[in-house]
Amino acid sequence: MVADPPFDPRRPFTRAEALAAGVTPWQLRGAGYARVYRNVYVSRDVPRTVELRARAGLRLAPRGTVVSHYTAAALWGGALTARSEIHVSIPVDETFRVDGIRTHRDRVVRASTTRGGVRLTTPEQTFVDLAAELDLVQLVVLGDGLVHRRHTTPARLVEASWRRSGSGHCLALRAANLVRDGVDSPPESRLRLLIVLSGLPEPTVNLILRDPGTGDWLRRFELAYPLLRIAIEYEGRHHRDDAEVWAADIDRREGLDRNAWRVVQVISSGLFDHPLRTLQRVDQARVDRGAVPVGTFWDEWRRYFPGKDVR
Image: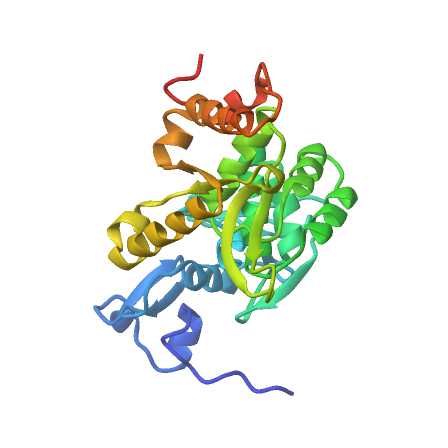
């Protein structure tokens, strides 16, 4: 028989465990402890992270419960808007209601694993689960992030999406086929999708230029049309706020000028305020390098990028 672990107030514990360890009800209500959920507490000096709240929720949940959906995505490092509720999936024959915890229950047997001692859905299962709640761009951003952190691969996301049935199947499959390896940030994902959903050719992701003589690494482009020698770069605020980064960017652009690369720089407003202008700039750069203009952009991009210049 395995002995129970010693009482540790820095890990979520139940009221019964506290009383058994000699903590009085008066002490539980005092300044030393904080209630996470009904009948679950932790030492007050422990940060209330997503992982802490997930652990606390599992202390109350029925056997077989796994952390899932938005909370699993957060624990895997997915770039999604933070949710105040903890999401868990429970067996179909169980009932579980606690304020601050959202339960999901269906007949799907969810693939799960353990990360940091927390039982949660696998990256692939998390991706297909959220296909019923996210839009196309949000889901690709999530997938790109999971791949970037080496938790999964585009091929594994496609395979999991093929196996999914019911709500979200088609969206999961389409998003998985748009996930790419080598994407460093959510803005890069969104910029690529703005381009792709407009009907412009998909740029190459994470293009690395090497010295033709030595093969040494020279520079990396987030997005590029190699044959046209066009680079498309998202420039976040850190590029201007960090003097060393900004100086390196200047040196890099001078090198590009010498090698006849054209760089289309896009900042936040180019995605969220003026996406049409961004598309026009990319298309014009292609035309200037001899490509055929796209003509009329497809309409689908407007659904996900409702900027100020969208008509």
